[in-house]
Image 1 (cartoon, helix red, strand yellow):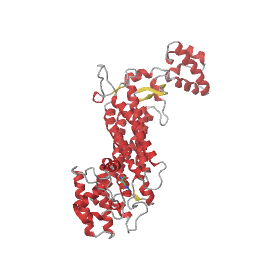
Image 2 (cartoon, rainbow, N blue to C red):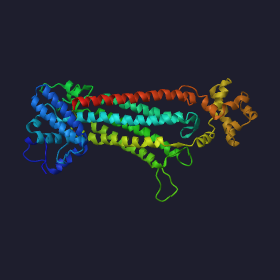
Image 3 (tube, helix red, strand yellow):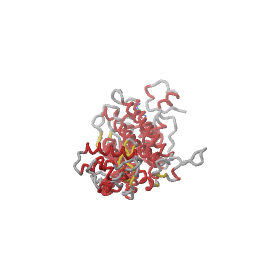
Image 4 (cartoon, rainbow, N blue to C red):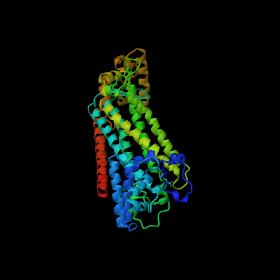
Length: 480
Ligand code: ARG
């Protein structure tokens, strides 16, 4: 096999096969092929416009590249294993096909700026795809929330019964996290969408290039200010993987609850058969393996984040070959997060909640103790004192095997003479939930307001993603 490198002139000997195989990134960066060709088309057009190559050469190069692009689209392009990376591979292929003109494509650029330009274009699409999935999940949660404004379940702190909440309230807490994830990705997108092409190796170039023109052809909103930073900056990659990590942590929190809530001990929710698994030995089992795997895979994405961060630690300026290793954690984080989102959406859509069961559990655990204390406060008792009094009532109730609302008034009055007959009105689940009308509270009317705010955000997020997708499509229509 011939070893096709783009730098053989200086060398008398040939790169050994094992050295090529050790240094090559083709296996990973082959998925950047489309972006590499597109980047080259823009670069060639800029070279032509600036008179750095002739118009004829430009046309031949662009035609050749478009042919390769068609083959990539049809999945018929063969990039065999003896290239150092996708970038040199495509350049070789082009030159093989169009001859001399192909050798001029690399004028005024380096693989250092080329690789990172490709990665940035790739990540723009990745962010749009991931956020679309996140928004689909948000929509699924909003739908369930709308129909569960009055479904009551125990709210937990420390995984102990705390105060009753509505299912919608609980789900909207998860939604709030996901909504921030979408916004975090949108924010990172701004820093991804900067064009490093034209930085060349690290010092810029002697040719009269037009960086603004290339950046515009590729749909970037700006281009990097400093060429050394242009080739060495991987902050955007680290940010991307961080955003994936936090999204995965949020998904794993949802999944953890699905695992617990689907146990017979809780019995709050049942997963659809289509998204449940059985046991090879215990015939009765219905296991939440998908939820467990999402929870488990979050650890891999967190590992990806550590990899990207560690990669940058202590690197001198500017390009160092270490940076080639950014692809594995970036692609890993993307693929895992996308796969987890794709499966968790139908899992959530098909959940069956057991409202009766949740309500029954909510009747237990003395969760109306705070309401009892709040009652005393309305009768003029300072809250700290009310807390002490109610603590005593709860101790008595536990000792006599009764719920708070089953303790008779004369008994209650032994703890405080402020208790009157109307105390029982505040102790029902409906009252406990319904009176928490503060903004962000769990009452159905507060939750309705939460849904309004959050669904408005989700709608705006979807519009923003669609608009950016349309903008990129028109960028490609113009260029290609
Ligand atoms: N495959 C390399 C990467 O992904 C290309 C850059 C190689 N550049 C160099 N100067 N050796 O980073």
